[in-house]
Image (cartoon, rainbow, N blue to C red):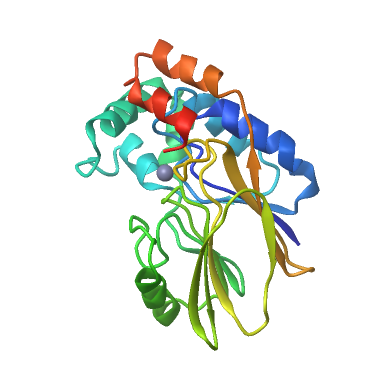
Amino acid sequence: MRYLILSDMHGNWEAFEAVLAHAGVESFDLALVLGDLVGYGASPNEVVDAVRALPRQVTIRGNHDKVVAGLDSGASFNHAALEAARWTTASLKAENLRHVTELPPGPTVVAPDLAICHGSPLDEDAYVFSEYDAHEIFLRHQPRLTFFGHTHVPSLFSLGPGGIDVQALRGDGSLALEADMRYLLNPGSIGQPRDRDPRAAYMTYDEGAGVVSWWRVAYPIDQAQRRIVEAGLPSILAERLAVGI
Ligand code: ZN
């Protein structure tokens, strides 16, 4: 099985389109979509349409999807995030709003040793940044390999005989998985990277070869920014795309 791992598109169609073209969707057996299809960006319908069109996929919801769907009040959101969520709710076509509303929560076990979640497998809205966060997950969550999103930072936590190792993943790279180790892997964000690299981020997993790869893709940021400004969304949401924060 070859998996394509996509997360945190956040209504950024230009970024998502570039990733889909770079990855070559048809060559994958299954796409794993880790949530936050919408929120922040000005092209929610294009992104939801494209997710719905993925030929083989497992998709779960993110915290922004929940707020846009009215399943969460967004009390924890800052002003710009809440304004974008309200704009997105009003802008989505009825069928796309229904699709976002019906996305299932994670974690979802995709294969016997493979799971996906938005934040943490223990709490879909929790952020996994530290080895302490990872430690609790490794204790209480069984699958050997779990892909998660939410932080918008490409990262890797591994548990082996020597304990937990944490890596921030820069640029493109790959890792051969070790049989006696367990992994939490974050592909980073397609639509709003926050590791000071503005390029869209995604991962692939070749199960047969036992290799996870991470990728960065340049896209026309100025077009995504212009759409945000023209939609009347807070300008900070456009500005941050250029610097990847
Ligand atoms: Zn997100």
